Amino acid sequence: QVQLVESGGGLVQPGGALRLSCAASTSIFRAYTMGWYRQAPGKQRELVATIPSGGTTNYADSVKGRFTISRENAKNTVYLQMNDLKPEDTAIYYCTAQLTPWRSPPNYWGQGTQVTVSS
Image: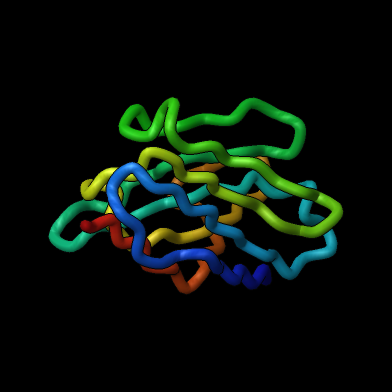
């Protein structure tokens, strides 16, 4: 069982930036591919980005060039740096974990953190 705890959400103006963090409770963090999903009201859940340990990152087309996923294996933590935020990025963001190789939907989910982009 892996517990995931997100932090870093909040309210930001359009064009602003936020960094989400997710701490994972596992002794084999390197064995997991980490991912971020988001879900906006009335919309389907969307896979935002994934990062395996030592592999290639992947991004949804809607966030390419603006979001960056990264991880610190020594801290069991994954990050999502979000720049040039737009109102359509408003959603609950969920940290997820799946033993590599990635499979959707992943096995483990955090509780979610709200990101609101509004002036």
